[in-house]
Amino acid sequence: MPPTAPAHGWRRAASRMRRVKVTFRPSAEADLLALYRYIAAEAGWETAGRFIDRIEVACLSLATFPERGRKRDDIRPGLRILGFERCASLVFVVGKREVTIVRILYGGQDIERILKP
Image (cartoon, rainbow, N blue to C red; front, side, top):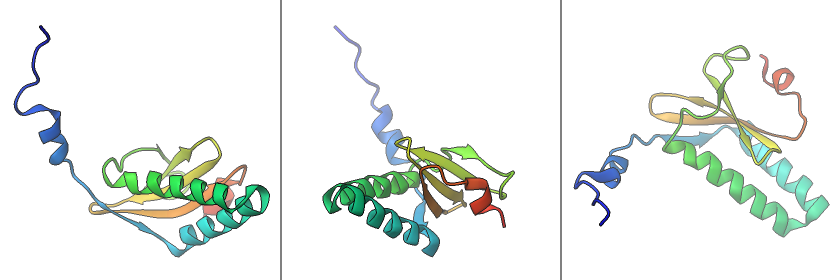
């Protein structure tokens, strides 16, 4: 007979996880709109809408596990980059109570050139 989970289990631990607010800078919102328009022109508005929905879900999931992605302090202090479906990069900064989505870059864009101040 398999052992039973302890009463304190993972569900209770998950309910105590720190959650932070996720916000989008205007530049990230503009990136999403430009990406939607590009994909809609190439593959149709339904495909574009589904792709943008998945990106938004990925961004909002940073509320639970914000310390994901690769640290890129070499570009800007506190900056992190997380790949999305091998075709986009989520660029964000993690604060104490908030994750700020800075940019959402698609394809082969030169991330360092775009993000350097």
